[in-house]
Length: 265
Image 1 (tube, helix red, strand yellow):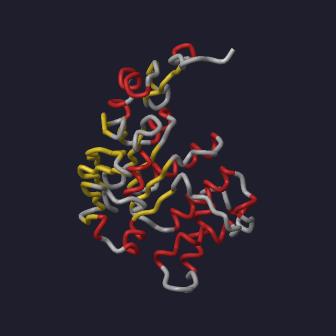
Image 2 (tube, rainbow, N blue to C red):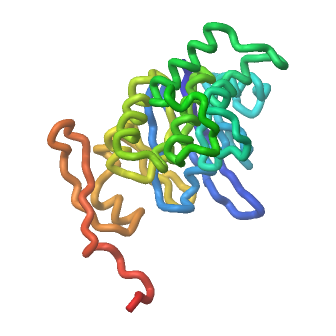
């Protein structure tokens, strides 16, 4: 396995700084969540890890390597990503799409080995997809597609997995199954989550971004406090321990939501 580290990373796009001076460790084998309001820089930080963006300043380290210096094929063997815009306009079958995760390991039209075919079947089984193997991707629901893309990432056999809102479109059962899978995968995981209670349950550590800056990092119990949620998200919450796990759980009240400018009548 390997760790992931942001070292004073700044990202500016068209003269606007989106992420500023981000330093964050994702230790080997741990699940680290990124949370923050819309537009706080979470997805931009992830794009630097799967090389859709290059930092304007600073370094992303994978193990002892500067990610920017690695050949693309080598980094693709180490880092797999589930992005928000990971859709497909081509009607591959589910099995074909999952098999694309092996692309960084193959040359040309090299066929999958028996081990690789078994790896694909195992990933589809873990994501409850075997019954959909021959279905076209365009016929699937959003949640089914999301699970296919997770399976594709696992088939890549990465050491680092980055996921941007992986629970989008998933029903409650599949949300819990996916996050449980991540916790038990042994991979180094960096995941963006909007559901703070899921983040508390799934993550070993949490980093909080606000206006492009890291404003807090630590265990869920250290980070998910009523004061921080009020300051960063502008929402009043009560924080209570989960009755089974002790993880912090946030209780919201619609009456405590800030009033928008103007309202419908």
